[in-house]
Each structure stands twice: as structure tokens, then as C-alpha cells.
Image 1: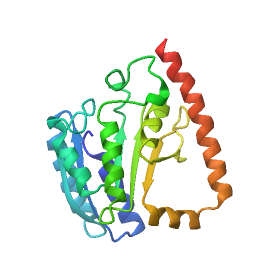
Image 2 (image 1 turned 30 degrees about the vertical axis):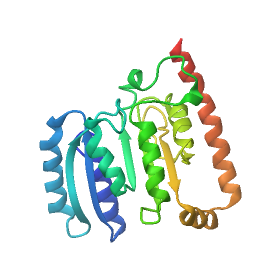
Image 3 (image 1 turned 90 degrees about the vertical axis):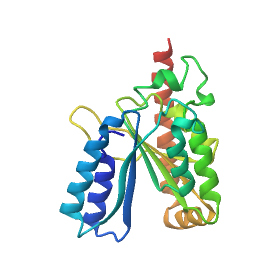
Length: 223
């Protein structure tokens, strides 16, 4: 959402490591007024990093994550999922609309509503299709982590695994993003070969412990 800083970050990272991939992204927003900012950022990126990274289409489309994926207001988002998306970033938005995604007191295993059940299901279908992308990642960053257990519960119903990558700490406290990963069989086999079972077990235990902690936050906010 917003002005497209997430796409800019991917472009800058790709330019820094010398990636040959062509980066293109869509900013999905509830407020169409961000379109001017998105166009301005795209123009600056092409001027300053265009020679080191191939930037494809960068545009803004309207959506509403409080509504199901098949709602007419989410038609462009739904179409992009069918085309195949490598990375979704939900930056500081789910907390703002938490009341529309989950009723207080709802069992955590029931997950969340809005766009997410349909989004995760559609991504699963696309990734398991031989002609689709081999992987899909959904990254959440927010002011609070209390929705992470409910989001994880919804995603796991559609084959996503849950990770919590380490990132730079802010001045106040460590940030704990939620990363949901989906791989087809070929990509999963490659990942299993590259990652030791000890590393996977240690990270799984860490994720499980943190989600249990966040469950307490969520239940406390429900009271």
C-alpha cells in the first residue's frame, strides 16, 4: 500500500546484489490518492537505478482487504494472483482494520476473514499448477504482532509454512515480521537439501514459542 516504498526496497536490493531479474509491482490501496506518489517513485527509480536493475510496470490499483477476494472491489488483486505473484507485502495495515478481519473472542484456529482466506487459497492453486510460480511469500509488518497467530492459522490451512525472519532492530524494540511461505514440490525438495534439519527444527521451535506468546496478546485484547 501507500506510495510504493516496498517495491522501491525490492528494486534497490536487486540493484545492490546485481540481480538480473526484472522487477515489477502493483501497489494495492484503498485510497486512490496515492497514485501520484507511486508514479513519482517509479520515475525516480528508473532514473537512478534503471541501469542496474530492470524495472517493469509499477502502478496502483484499488482494493479492500476487509472484503473477500472475489468481491468486485478486489477484481484487480484477484487477477494478479492468477497471473502469479512472488511476494506480497502487507505493511502496517492489518492492525488498522483488525476489527473487520476478526471478531473479538473468535478462536485463534478459526483464523481471520476479509481477503485472506481467498488470497491464500488462490495462491495455493497457482503455486501447485505446473505452469505457475514455484514459490509465493506473504510478508506482514505491523505495529503489533497479536494478529500473527490468526493469520498463520488461516495460511496453514492452505499449505503455507510460517517463519519469522530476523531484521534490524529499531531503537525501541525488535521488529518481528510474519513471513508465510508456500512452495511447490520441486521448490520444497530443493529447500530441504539446502537447509539442515537442525536449523529447521530450531526455527520451528522459535516460531511456535513466539506465536504462543502473541496468542496471549490477542486474547488479552479480546477482553
